[in-house]
Image (cartoon, rainbow, N blue to C red; front, top):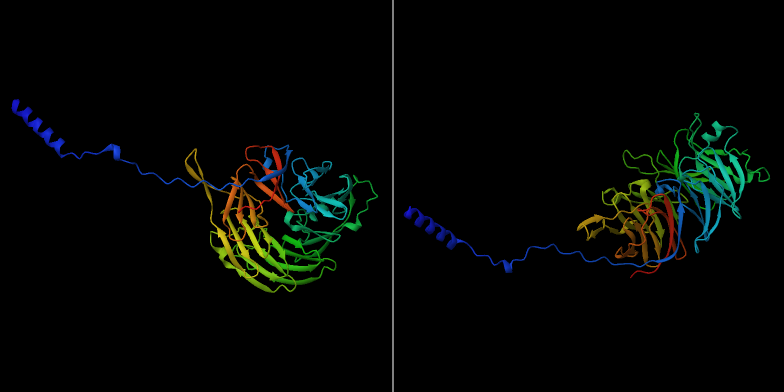
Length: 430
C-alpha cells in the first residue's frame, strides 16, 4: 500500500512538472475589427403630410407615379379613390376631388383638366381650378365596348397635345389590342358632369395580337411605344402614321414586360436586361450596354428605376440593390456601387440595404436615393458614398424633384394604414 501511494505521488509530480504554464493575464482573445461609423447626412425637412388610408396596407396607398405640372403635383390616393392636388413648395393641399372610380392608374393633365382613368372603362374629368367633377366619360357605347377600350398598364398611358393615349386591354371580346387615342376636345363639358357620356377612342395602331406595355410622348406630336413582341415604334399622334420601327434585342425568354423608356436629347433609351439606345428621329441603333447581362447589374425591367441628368443615366436595380451610372454619350458604365450593408450594433450583425421603388435624383453634385434604412446620398460624379439620414425613411416610395425640393410619396415601415409625403431640401453632401 505504501509503495502504491509513493508511485501515485511520483506520477502526479511528473505530470505537474511537464505542464505548460499559461499567463492568463497576457492572453488577449481575437477580436473582429469594428466597422467604421457611417457618414451622416442631415436632411432639411421642408414639410410632411400624413395621408390616412382605409387599408391596413399603407404601402399600396400610392399605386402609380404622381404627375407634376410646374409647382403642382397630382396623385391618386388609391385606397380612398380621391385625386389630390398639392403645392410641391409648401405641401399645401389645393384641392381634393370627390371619390372617383380609380385604381392603379394615376391622373393625367390636359389643359385645364385632370383625367383620372377608372380601370373599368370610364374616365373622370376634374376641373383643375377647383377639383370639381367636370365630366364623366365612358370609353364606349356600352359596357363591353368600354371595357375592351380600357387601359391596361399605368406606364402605357401618356399625353400628347389634346390627346390621351394608352395601350388597351380587351377583356370581353376578341377586339384587337393596340394604341388608343382619345381626343379631349370631343368631351361635352356642358352636360351633367355625373351623367356618363360616350366618347369613343380611336384605335390608331394595332398588329392584331400584341399589347403595348410602355410608351412615352416626346411633346412634339410623336409618341414612342414598345409592344410585347419587342418592337419599338415611333408614331405621329395626329395622323397615326408610323414613322419608324425597330426591333429591340430582348434576352431569350424575356420578350415582354414593362420595360421603361426614356427620351434624352436626340436619343431614346430602352431598359431591358441590357440598355439599348436609338436615334429618336430615325430609329437607328446607337449603342447597347451588354454588361447588364451580369448578375450584379441586371436591371430586371419594370423594377428598374432610372433618371437622366447631364448626359448620365442613373438607375437603381431593386432586386440586387445596385446603383449604376451610364454615360449616354459614350455608352459606357461610369461607375457602379456594389450592395451596401450596415452594421446593427444591437444584434452585432450586418444587414443589406434595399432600395424600394424610388428614383435616383440628382441635384447639384449629389445623388439622392431612398432605401429601407434611410435616405442615402452619393457623389453623382463618382458614386462615392456621402452620407445617410436614418430619420428620413420610406418603403415603396415614388419621388419627384421640383427645383431643390425632393418629395417622397410612400409609407413608413412601422406605420401601416397611413401614407406619408415628405419633402426635403437638397443640400450638397461633400
